[in-house]
Image (cartoon, rainbow, N blue to C red):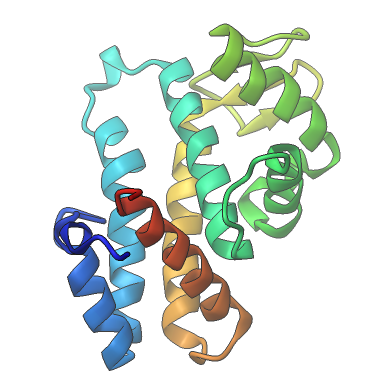
Length: 192
């Protein structure tokens, strides 16, 4: 039985489940692409960008960035979730996204020492460090620039939204988005 109360759930600040379904029904690519941008930007990027520079924390930035990568990759791939695929999500993302290609050869190490280190241990491991200056990744010193990383994710989010706008509704990028959004909406419903 469908939970009608889920229609009122906000998927972003402006879009409810009901409104998203209306956009899908109208095949409004522009508004859906804008919704996807806003959903990720307002949840992951804007809160971090609003923190005064002196109070920003690289660990907080990278924890959010890691969550965002997994969520974005599940949208891009059309995955129900990243359960058992988290490492693969980072590998795919770093290989595909130009801004992060410097990390493609060490995606497993990044996953283990940054993503898992921060999310499970509240620290980086294996000698990896998080800084907020310099290049996005320094392979000699195993440093990740959290500020550059966040900026790269923001650029990717813009590109992803633009690709949705310029792609046809039957292209893989749209099929996968719809598949993922069906799961997101199902997760909004109460189980009976």
